[in-house]
Image 1 (cartoon, rainbow, N blue to C red):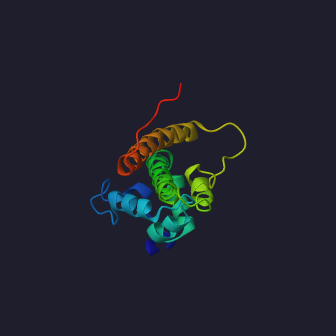
Image 2: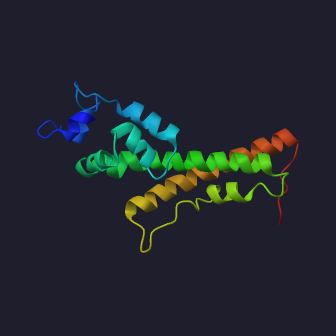
Image 3: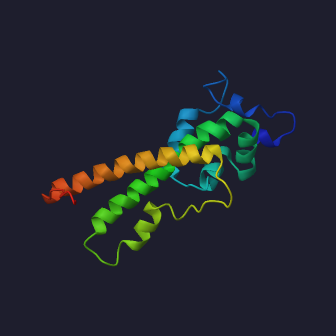
Length: 158
């Protein structure tokens, strides 16, 4: 986005996207696909690849509240689900190795993303609720899949 660096040529952030501007140079759908495939919960790698720099990424977030507060929150939730799902899959594959689960468990529990001090924001609460619901579904599916492949049956403990 070299034009964003030149004074007087900066377009509103939302106007950069074809979904909101017929002359937009980017597709929000493609940005989402790339953001998810990068799977960086810090946003840094995506900022460099998609926006060209961290400063430009921050400008887009600052000038387009809907992107920052809704679109990006959903993308980050999906990235976190993707990372946790991959970690759970690794745990399942490494379950027979007593030394192999600590790092994958650390990721699956989201320990790489420590919560900031203080009361969580409304957006953070919503994000965590979405993530937990998806994680629960993913874990249930993974457990069922492992049990089916291993010919195991779930025993109810009373």
